[in-house]
Length: 205
Ligand SMILES: C[S@@+](CC[C@H](N)C(=O)[O-])C[C@H]1O[C@@H](n2cnc3c(N)ncnc32)[C@H](O)[C@@H]1O
Image (tube, rainbow, N blue to C red; front, side, top):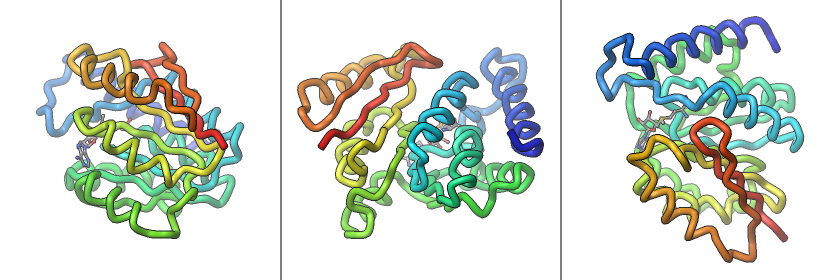
């Protein structure tokens, strides 16, 4: 891994661990709420297996997950479009991208995920466009996000959804999401216990 990327990932992991252990007091709206390192490794590997070029992320926060992905997407000369509503997190993410040297790989869309995804869904350009999507924003809208995103995924494209198992406060929303995916003949899906529980969904022909 490029030095500048691993250095920033290491720093953000320390910050995330302090935050999660409550050793550092951080206001809720300023929390990274990042995926785990294992989830970062998992999505990095899926992107590599797929030679992914076009990626979408819903819920960027300060860019930890985005940087895990940018390492691979940059090698493919691809782009990550990432959505975030919180301006102060966007500022921190931009600083992190700059330091990691991945700024040119990332396109930040500032605003509400529902609105941005709805706009994208109306563009012919995005039909079957993305090779990989990470869904990691508010959980109450996860079904709506998935349904807007699904037509924008290429055949064989992968959607990873975080927080299927933890924290427990999301269990009910994520259970409904699991039910929603079940029996859909256009996809295969598994719930992996890696990290906070990752739903890995592949779009079939
Ligand atoms: C769990 S965090 C994302 C963590 C990030 N993927 C990572 O691993 O570093 C969720 C982020 O989604 C953002 N978010 C929540 N609801 C949103 C919405 N409706 N539209 C856009 N962003 C939203 C939050 O501000 C927060 O930064």
